[in-house]
Amino acid sequence: MVASSKHALVVGASSGIGLAVAKEVAPLVAKLTLCSRSLPTDLLASIKAKNPDIEVVHERLDVSLLHEVRKFTTKHADTQFDWVVLSPGIMTMNGRTETAEGLDVKMSTHYYGRDLMAQALSEQAPQASFMHVDPGIVSTGLLDKFPWYLRLPGKALVAVAARSPEKCAKHMVSALTKDEFATGWHLVGPNAEEVAKTKYQTDALKDVVWKHTLQTIDDVMKQ
Image 1 (cartoon, rainbow, N blue to C red):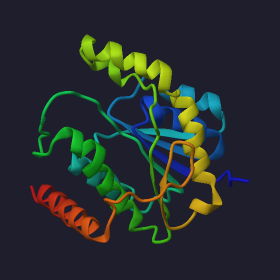
Image 2 (tube, one colour; image 1 turned 60 degrees about the horizontal axis):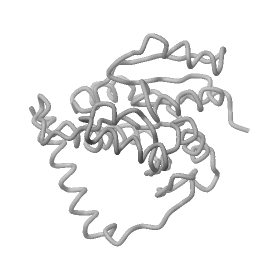
Image 3 (cartoon, one colour; image 1 turned 90 degrees about the vertical axis):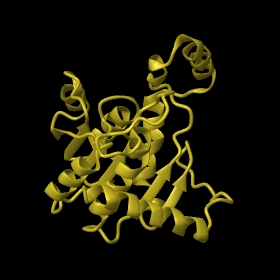
């Protein structure tokens, strides 16, 4: 039985997988903090519909901007989050598009911003477990922003191979509650199963990526 006093944080909660996870996790927690760049008018009400007793708050956050991420983590340095789900995402065919901080918006949203948030929040949770989850192919509506010649074949593939955000969220939340994932770090597949490391996940490459990540974040935070 999951304790009703839990506090969950879902980043990227305005649509897609993040929104579906927020709705799925709502009955399991007492408080839910949602972060996204925008606040859909029905977001908070849709969460309350899943759990009328839940305390739900929304904070605007653009994960592509590392200074915004740092401001959020500093504000919540003493906040106890029992579960943290980082699911911000964008899909675009544009080339490098820099943020005001000089990073590519895609990389900053999908990697640097998430990494900075995970690092900062884990400083207060030395026993935290970490999961990198592959959701598989999910019908999130991101293809709607593509040109028609990519959107149409993409939607055909989605219709055949993709699962709904709601079905994806059920697996994601089940991973949060599994005892075997309660400690350490894990690579998790679309059905909440542990998967093996690839040939690229070596200690040598890990060190290279880690040093690059820390240096990139440090350079931005000095601005």
